[in-house]
Image (tube, rainbow, N blue to C red):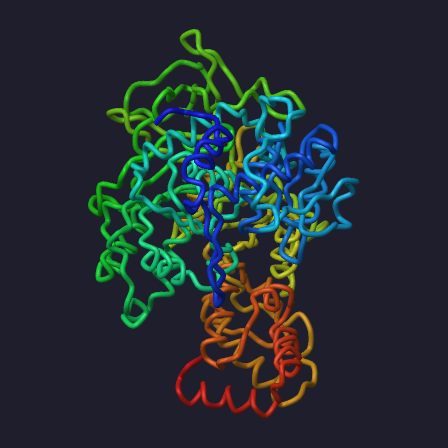
Length: 638
């Protein structure tokens, strides 16, 4: 497929097939709205004219998933304004990260549904709707051709967001390569729930389908988290041929499909490309998903493990899975290099290529590779090999017969559910939380179960108090957005060190797996003490809190959850929160907004918020107790 600029692709489709559907948007429990290529071109043109008249400089995009998002993206492209995708402000967003992005990028305009006090940018523009559909494709005449299309923010070596520069030609090259590797044709159809402010959601989910000229349905990430099997039903109902996400998404679907009834009416027979990337890809997860959903027509060969990173626009390599068999813990092949690109595996110390099958640092060269960061010196990210400039990815892996097998990181970066967390930041947050009793710490992932477990081993003086682990969990979550699954508190000098005294994280992981810290391990908040006394509450609130505790205990895998226990201290993360909300909602037949559970620190607080919501909508405490009693008698919860 030719790598044409996406604005040229949009112009061509708007002229020749204006009534063809470009995007659809579906919300859980609501209808479907559509946007044609003609409508996309018209709305983007109107907004581009407003951007052009508002000055120069980068544009911050602060919309949530929906039809407005691709309109805003193409408007920035047409206006020649570099685009900065960002998580929109709200109760689930990281305000400090957003502030750091704004401070670094200094955007001159914001595209948002409404002004946000958190974003101190003078110009705020909203995406036009159907009222602009008659405008036609009309790029603003004053727009300058901008080499940089996107400033994609990732975390730097200290966890501070760094803006990766993505050129227009890189977007064109990579979206064309994705369409080619996915095998997209005129008969293909896409579907995405991925956050559009991440590279996988933006490049792979929204822009690659335009490059291929196929329709794509957009789902909200929060709807996927709350009802992952709805994603699969949308694939079946739309006949989507290409959809996917990180490894944890497939593991979550397996956990939610506990009974055969969950598969009733589900048809995955037309799903040809189930891409798996953004974090470590696991044979075990794919095998479990393929086995569980085979009765619904899913074929294991549909899996397409991928490797990529924002510094390479998105995709570096991909290839269909060979199926289950062999060692389930062995590295997964992420296929061969995309066209027009070269992958080299290099000794990171000698800076020379290694032999086939030998592990080394993954280097990438091609038109999809970034020129560097928006600010700061990024020269150490690049090196020359055979007279060509290569990106040093910092990832470890090996090539075998042209196929790439990623195995880890050169530096200790914890990649969990598609997000990078720097071990040094996790350790610093924990040590700050414990104060003078803390000595040293090691943070890492352990591959166990359906997804890896974030682990912290921390040296402490004396006998640790019962409230120390919840405090550590809360501090790490607040500072890094990582929820620790396992914490081990060990005596001083227990962690392996180098000759210069530095903590050896990989050796600490090996010691943990060998059982060296068994007596000190606290997993998933096991035996946590209450953080506050149980307060007096009405009978309905108490009953509801008890049900919530039962559900939380099950999804977190802990022996006990008391109404006043900190849900963060118990290890409840966003995925487990979504599971708990869905189970409670199904059991009592009353709405359980995910935001209500995320915002509440304890089960008592969740119960208070839900009861207040239901009463405001006409319910009564008596009705709630009746629903809870019926659910309990029918073994619907607990």
